[in-house]
Image (cartoon, rainbow, N blue to C red; front, side, top):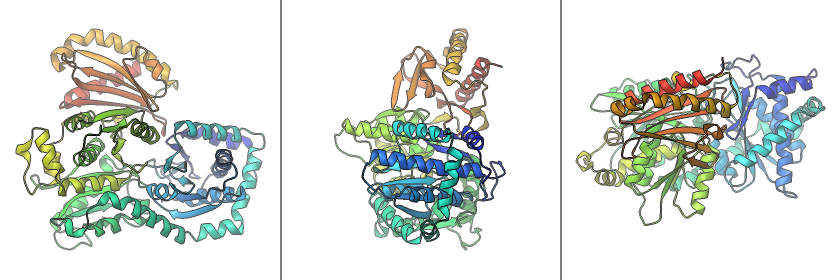
Length: 586
């Protein structure tokens, strides 16, 4: 570490992705993004210390004269402990009071710190195990909003560019060996117990139902995949409701498959659910016919997607992230009563099935740019405007945010589904949506799935959903795409009308919390989302293309959504991909 230079710091900084969604990079010493060991590159520990240093400056500027307590936590990535200690030692050296939770799901940290001070959370969310990163928050119960996140990023870049950056980092890392830092870092149990109690009290009002109220037995499987939720409240909360919980891979840090809870990473949960039903699940003797669905979490515990048991097919089925979010929206909207205007807030690539569900209940849908902070910010803005926004989230990753929470939480999804299974919401939904004939008294999750609007939507983790482009200027990419797209439209418009019923299109951009419809210059969407919405001759939306450079990975994401037509989704995505590659300089 003594040989650390300013050039080392700047090279490490250049490899990082800094966005409102978090700061991320490959922290593993080997540089391998799939490295499961705990050693950290020295220059990345230096970045962690400098990041905490500028966060201290930010806090002193935001709350002059106040000594806000900062809570530090981490997910179960093997590099997390060293990074958390670097942050802790730095903040203590800056005379900022700190608490350390050890391993904790990020919804725990946010619930605890919402009325206290702020937090620094060490995680790279769904990225591979060799990655790590940081998220920051202050009073209010969420990560820093876009504008504030940009200020902190600017301070961080300036700090890393100072001529004494390496020396400053070495000094700060030296503070991590101090007695106070060691005492707090090595004994997180008391803080963790407080945090869990706070989180349980925060979530429990959303649960409502206790064991005696559930009219029949229900079982839920969980594949924790060694995530931070292994040591969270999931088991205690669900058991307190009379729900049988069956868990696998529930030792923190034992990450046995890919982290992002989508696609093939849900296959272990599906196999576990089938084994529970058949009586072949190791450690759970006997058949557990009450186990109707299971969920899998990502490493920091803010996302969880589902598999359910289809009784008619006698097998478990994996739900797409978009379907999971649709269930959450249905679960929350179907329970709302009253005359107050209601809205759902989601991100740009969320499927239009949400619009159809919302329309049944008289709710409006508003979209923000992809990124949790953008969705949370727009939901808050709409509440100030008089809307009742009970649920928001990102359909593209299945993340549900149920007010008053300001962070995605798989328990939001689980509780919404439990409400659907045992409340009157499903019956109301069937009646209002013209599907009364599909309702039966002992309905299952499979029955609910059979009533959802049918859309074919690209999954964000599919290989066909991302591109690596030479051009890094997103506005320039989209400007050249516009030229290619408009020529394509003129060439194929008659075929599109004849084959798919597409009569017109409009371009929509989402930047931060602002959506602009009917834009004439695609390049003005910049680094935000760009959507091409296709409609039929009556003006009814049929499908869309969407694109945006990822804020957390060095890829360009594309996605298409089509009503009841996998063929149209496949065709549009193929054409979108082809036109983008044609617009990309060789």
